[in-house]
Image 1 (cartoon, rainbow, N blue to C red):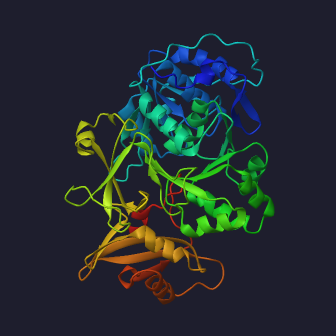
Image 2 (cartoon, rainbow, N blue to C red):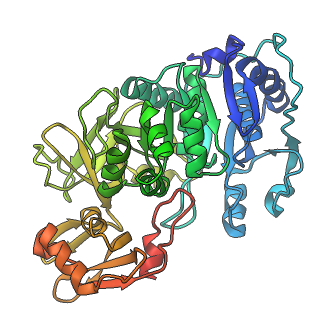
Image 3 (cartoon, rainbow, N blue to C red):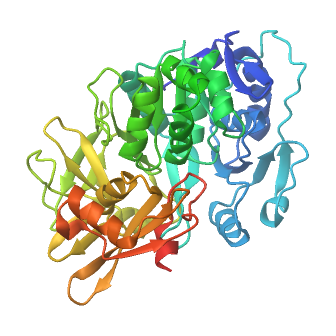
Length: 482
């Protein structure tokens, strides 16, 4: 059985978690998480009210120590979605920070407050419970539910350990690293990579609570060595770094800048590199697979791609008939399929959905990509929303979005397809203009036709004040269509 957090079991005095001005060493974390683990032991599933706090981190660690599957709940969740998650996962209790006001379905459960006092001493904690088995369910993370109600993705301890160890290799992640981020703690990026990742390595995390460019500059100018963010955060950093030498210098000090959860536009890659001399690396994963690929910290620049498969992870592209795509021409689009120890076990209570998600032993991601001569994968979008079939061509929305963002009058852009009797689908652009006189629709259409092939130009351009985004910064294209 793999020890998930060796530094925790060793009761190391090294710093582990910091949220604002509140912090815990590994020894203190063991002192508070150990007794909580004993209190919840024997349960099948528990809910965790996943605010961006020290308490949430302690609650999840306690559940992992106890071998109890934790269901992180978004504190901004809607009523109907929460009711579905509670009914589907049937948690026997909820962990929450003291004083948190829980909504109806959670308020009806037995509640245990996560008590983290500021007066914890550094005395040696009591021995922790025995390590659960590698296949024991660790977390049940609910997907965003783009096709029906959210599905509960059952992630075993084995998947967590494998992904975090593969990232240790790809990112040269060590116990000396101090990770800085402001990501939510109810999803893979912020919770598994952003909190459990540092704990697995014996390093530490400084959570900002709320993202700001000033907070990032402060932390990276001090102890921070790594930064995790989503594209909306890096877009703001790119805009500020060009005019703020303090931020540019702080970004330059970072050992690693990592962007995930959606594609980072090439314009933001270029602006950050120009201001700081630091490249942002991207990785690719899903709730069901955790991490699959990454640009390597010790590898060549591969901006615009999500890099190569992580150690132990197998990745392939398949065509519409399910046949593997051979060759690395950087142009042929296929669906990404994945297999390896990083995969989930099942969708909770959904055996038919679990079966449908696999092609033999390969998980069907629904993401479309190309593969270049160096083996780097470039995501072109979701099969359901980002692959546009127009005039006999398969066109990825992402490359058109990058072309639009290269225009100085465009602040944000999204591209979708709509049914068209002549073309099959017509390319539609949704644009948030920069301040000042906006470009015309014709100017943007001509700009894309000049940057890319003419058949990739938008046939319609809509101007908006803002694009609809979810909590992870992903553009919600179904809302655009609606």
